[in-house]
Length: 141
Image 1 (cartoon, rainbow, N blue to C red):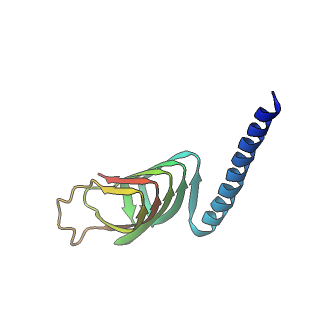
Image 2: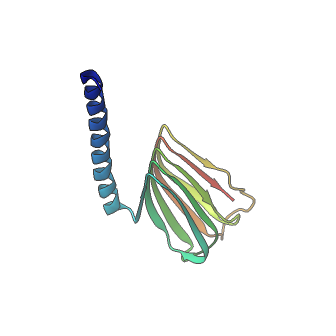
Image 3: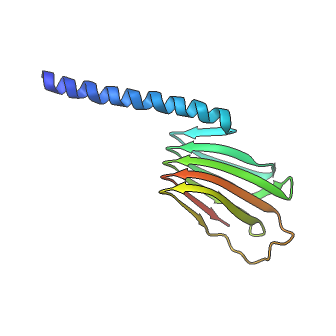
């Protein structure tokens, strides 16, 4: 390898190391705020006849699938708090749940594909609070 290639390789590896260092610090900060922190991986979370009491998670450079179709809500109103950066999240919910979306998105999309067949007056309510950057969230039945 000549000197110019070694220099380029050194700069490239230094940039990768700096990025890894910064991301590690960010993940540590998010772990102090959220119940679960998912970074650089994929994860499937399923509540199968389990009680869902609410959850908060940070998702960074990852993909997450949350299946709540067989979940039981502890209270009439429960909160799912999601922070996403460069990620994708898919959430499956029962048809009789009322879904309420609250949050901010930066160059991101949150899509509610649930069927709104009932008036949701006495149905269980799931509030999804979100903070998205370059991410996508899909809610479906």
